[in-house]
Length: 394
Image 1 (cartoon, rainbow, N blue to C red):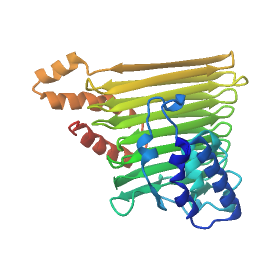
Image 2: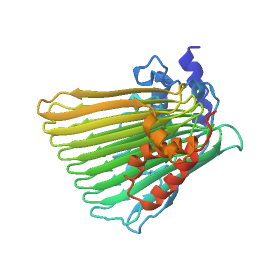
Image 3: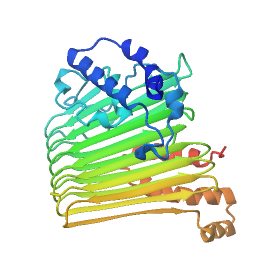
């Protein structure tokens, strides 16, 4: 038996014991599982996974468990329900054949969540979806949250995804967003899962003409975390990607982003910040692609990292792939430690060393937190961040 067959064969039993589904979903599942078994789990020999070893996931014998997101903040005119026939024209159009975890999620598609925002709808408060897993009960669970969001032209709304849990488990989540012309969308993902959990998450956003889209990723929990964000821009589209990852102990977090400028006059801004302590590891790989016809593109990407210990490791790789000639694109990455002069100044004012360290670390993260437009979310993140910064690295 080949290594790929050995790893993927363990998932076959769970796959065959799924609930019945409509013929088109059953066919989609089968195509996705066939692709998953063909690819197998990625290894560190794969360029996109060089610094992230998913062997602990591949070796574990997970049992699939259904999960239903708890939805709040839905106005009456927003349609919400399970993924069914009316979602077929949009679902799984993001080429699951390129990512084993997206293929695996699709192979276990069961219900999911379909949000449809009618044309011209303005949603005042945030729509929030919470996924929580109890890995302390029963067999080692694997959950596959799936969400499809279709936003009509000129819609305006905020969407928050939260991931929490207890014990050891695997969350393998996929969110697809399709935005019509002129839509304004703020998306937030907050991952604060158990310190024993694995989290693999993929966001795909296909943005129509003149859309204004922002996505903020906050990663603080989990033992092994991978976040993929893929955004495709049309003509005149503006996209902003912000991210904050805070890891300590032996945590590992990997952020891969792709901004695809497919049409002219697109604008994108990206700022990801990382804080690493203990023996933690992190990866940032940000790719900006400007296609041949995407003239007048304006794109800026920045990754900044604060390393608080000698044993923490960050691998950062900003990328530009430019096939047009009339563009303005910049990228950059920094890795540094706390400023010694600032530490001395705070300590000279009677602030203890640990408190001074936490104050300066918090100030580094504050730039991302301040960009969050939802006050309640900002307040809760400030509390989580405060607790995280006061944890003693293991």
